[in-house]
Length: 96
Image (cartoon, helix red, strand yellow):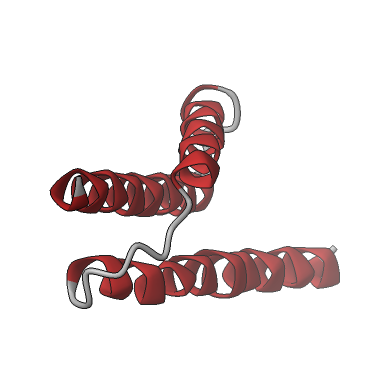
């Protein structure tokens, strides 16, 4: 029993740090390109879809699987998608 609990604890920490933090950090180069370099490096159609799936995942985490770590990772992922999408749309409008 103690081994199972330990493995679940390790998996929870791995999820937050490997899936959660790395996922969020992966958005930073795109956000930097959009805000700092004014480089349209994000595909609007892809980010619309990722934002939609991020919203569904966030809602799932809030109402179906109310796990705090999953909620935090889902929220951060959704916010990162929103930031990239809004920055890309704003950049596109400025170039028109």
